[in-house]
Amino acid sequence: MLLDSDTQLNQKSYYEASAQREPLSEPLRGDIMADVLVVGAGFAGLSAAIELAQRGYSVVVLEADRICSGASGRNGGQAIVGYASGQQPFEVQLGRAGARLAWDLSMQSMELLDQRIAEFQIDCDHVAGYLYVADSQRKARALEQELQVLERDYGFQVDFARGQAVQRHIQSPRYCASAFERRSGHLHPLKFGLGLARAARSLGVQIFERSAVLDIQRGLKLCAKTSGGSVGAQWGVLAGNCTLGEYGPRVAPELAPRIMPVGTYIIATERLGVELCERLIPGNAAVCDNNFVLDYFRFSADSRLLFGGRVSYSTRTPANLSELMAKRMAQVFPQLKGVAVDYVWGGFVDISMNRAPDFGRLGGNLFYLQGFSGHGVALTGMAGKLVAEAVAGQAERFDVFAKLQHRHFPGGALLRTPSLVLGMAYQQLKDLL
Image 1: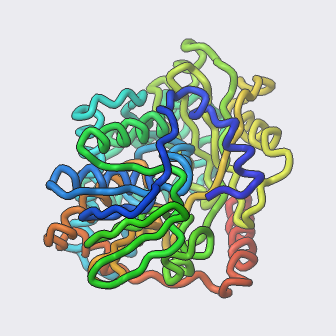
Image 2: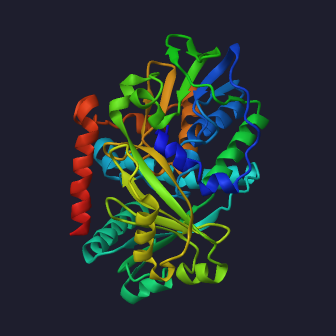
Image 3: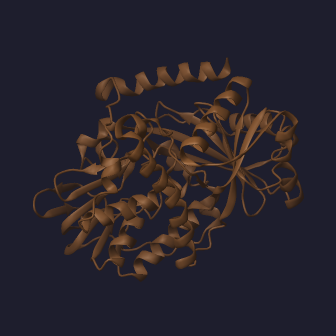
C-alpha cells in the first residue's frame, strides 16, 4: 500500500515506464470456490500460486490494486543471498543445524530464481554479480568480520578488497573496502513479476485485480469477501506484506504489530551510455553499503543509474526527494554530478523487528508470508515454494521460519511509528560518526 503522496511518486516509476503490462483484469464478481486462496499478487503470492498449481491445486489470487503494484514492482531489483537480519537470529533461536538449513534455503532461493526465469522464459534483464561496500574503516572491519564468519561457517566466499584495490570493482572515492560475489545479482522487478503472473495464468491460476479483501471468515473452510463477491477455499495464503493488518484491509490484525512499513525511494538518471557505466562499475554488479540506513544502486539495461536508499520511517515522503537523492548519488559518483534525473518513485516495504522473515500460520489452514525486510526478490520465490509444501503436508522446511520468535514493535498503535523514527535517527547518527 502507498500513501497518496507515494502513489503520485509511483506513477513516475522507471519500471512502469519500461515494462509492458497486460490490460487490467476484471475484479472478482460473484461467489467462487478454489482449493487455495492467495491474497496479494506480488512475488510471494504469485510464487505460491505457481507452486500450488504445479501440484494440482486450483488457485485464486485476489489483488487489491494491480499485479506487482506494491513493493514487488518498485524495489531496487537486487536479488541477494542471505537475510537482512544476518544469520544470528537463526543461530540463537534454532541452533547450528537450523541456521545451516536457513542458509541453504537462501542459496536455493537464488537457484529457484534462475529456474523460474528459464522455465517460463521471463525477459527481466537478469544480471549476476553483487558488490558489498563500506565507507569507513569501522564499517570495513565489520564487513570483513561478517564475511569471514560466513565463509567459516557456511562456505560463502567473496573477493574482499581494501584501499586502491576497491577501484577495480567500483570507481568511487567513497568506499574503502568491498566484497564481490557472483551468486547474487539484479533484475527488472516489474518485468519479473509480470512474467510470474503470466506463468501462473498459464497453469490455470485465476488472478483478480482491484479486488481488495475486506474480511476473511476463518474455520475449517475459509471465505474471503470483496466488494464484488467471495472466494471459498480450504487453504489460504496471506502475501500482502505491509498492506495487511492496520495498514490495509484488516484481514489479519494480529500480524500488524510484528511488522512496520518503511518508505524507500529510488531515482533513475538519464541514459548515461554503456562506456560510462562500464567505467563506473566494471562488472555491472548491483551495489549496497553496510550502513544501517543504506544506499543501494545498479545500472539498468538501458544504461541508467538506479539509485535508492533515502528512507522514511514516519510514513511521510521526504521533501525535495529528487534533489536529496541526486546529491547523495553525487557523493558516491562525483562523475555524475549534474546529470538529469528522469524518474523518482517509492513506497513502503515491510520490515520485522529483527529483520528476519516472518512466516507462519493463523489456525491450521491460513498461512502468512511477510517481513522480507528488503531481501524479497529471491526469498519470496522460496517462500512460495515452502508454503506450497506446507499445504501439501510437508511443512518441515516451512517450519524453519515459523519457529522463529518475533517481537512486536514497541509503542502500540499510536507510538510505534514515533519510536521507530527516534531509533532510526540514532542509528543514522552512528553511521555519520
